[in-house]
Length: 332
Image (cartoon, rainbow, N blue to C red; front, side):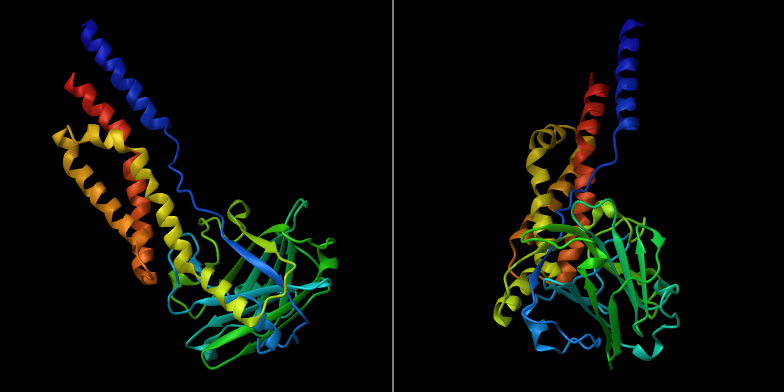
C-alpha cells in the first residue's frame, strides 16, 4: 500500500505540473523599422512619386491579424521618414480590384470600417499611444489610446491606381508634444483593413499580433529614428534587409536553438518505445528547420510553412520533459 501510495503521489505531482504549466511562449524578436531623415518634405498628395521618397527604405511583409501568416496577393508597402518639424508616412496597398474599395466615411467618422491604413505610435517617455487612420479617399481619424479625439492638426491624402491604392500623411511633432532624437525608439505598428479580401484575411499588420486586435501594445514593433539622410542606393539596400523573408529566416534560426536546449531529454525519451516515433518526427522537423535557416534566398511561402512548423515543434519539444517523466514513473 505504501509503494502504491508513493506512486500515486508522484503521479498527482506530475499531473499538477501539467495543469499549472504556463502557456508556452513563442519568442519573437521585436521587428524594427529605421526611420531616416528626409532631405526635404514630400508633397502630400497620396501618390508616393516624389523623388525624396526614394531615399527612405521600403518595408513590406504584412501578416494576418491573429494568425501570423503572410499575405501574398494584397501586400502592403510603407515608408516613414522625418524632418525637424514632422513625421511623414507613405503606404502603398496592392489590390487587384480597386473599383470595389470601400471609402464611405468622412473626416472624424468610423474610418476603420473602410479600406484603410492605421498607424499606431507610442512615443518614448509618454503614457499612451496615438492612432491615425486614413481611408482610400483620404478621410482621417485620430485617437489617443482607444479613445477617439477631435481631429488634430495633421494632413493626409489618398490616391487610387489600377492595381493599388496609396496614401501619404504629414504628422507634425507638435501633435505628439515631443521631438525625437537620434536613435530614439518609439513603439509602433502599421496595419491595414482590406474589405476586398477574403473574410479571414481582411485585417493585416506589420508585426505579428494576437487576435486581441491592432491595439495589442505589448507586441508593437519599434520605430528607430536616424539622423542620417540616405542616398537612393543606400535606401534600397536597407529595404532588402527589411523584407519579411530575412526576418522570418532569422526567427527560424532562433527557434531551432530549442533543439539543443532539450538534447538530453530527447536522448532520454528515445529509450522509451512509446515516445520513440514522436521524437523521431520532432528530430526530423528540426533538421528541416535548420536547413531552412541556412538556405540562401528561400521562397516566402516555404519559409512561412517552416515558421509555422517551428511553432508546433517548439510546443511539442517543450512538453517532452513531462512526458519522459511520466514514462519513467510507469516504468518504476
